Image (cartoon, rainbow, N blue to C red):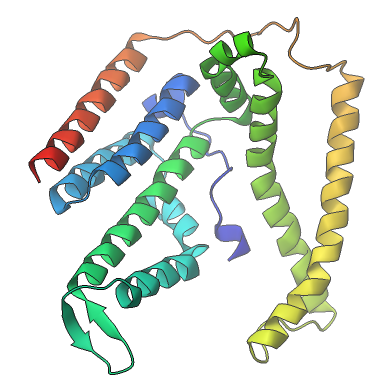
Length: 266
């Protein structure tokens, strides 16, 4: 399951989505996430499915590769569905005696599951089609107006980019540590829940040490290249909007307008 996490990874390809300006993809992901919470009906989610499927198709990222990212959060997905089904009051449709399932709870659980799945797929699509450097430049450019009030935009964008980049690195490191300990007799699938949790604790210590070591190496590498923040730095490849970016913005705004219109009518 460790290898199933796709957020933070980059899938190399030469699609139109890969060629979009990173600001377009970041803004598009934010608008898509907003639409998931604005739209609370089947027609709205059908439109979201069509848009997401079209973008995935254009990106040339294999759908099976994106589905892998859902396996890592399957337990969270099931937990959220169960909580909403049993703890939201309303018209009872199934009575277990000790707990009831209401129609409102069932509807909320289904919508919550759809949102979570779409949220993961949309976020994964952004990172799969955008390199860490492009993400850093895009976030810095979008947050650039905040510099006027003294917010260190470049440093914030750099930290967010490094955090995203470290997700696949740390998951791979965790996988290596677990396999090394399993080769020495460690068992992670045996015993009850408490025993399984205790068996994971010895993995956290070497993972923490490895993370600190990698962070120290990264800091030394940045210092050796005379990195001292964003003050006075220039871009080798300045971000420039192209026609495809304006078309993408227009499609996204039309999509969001349709979702809002459906919400108002419903």
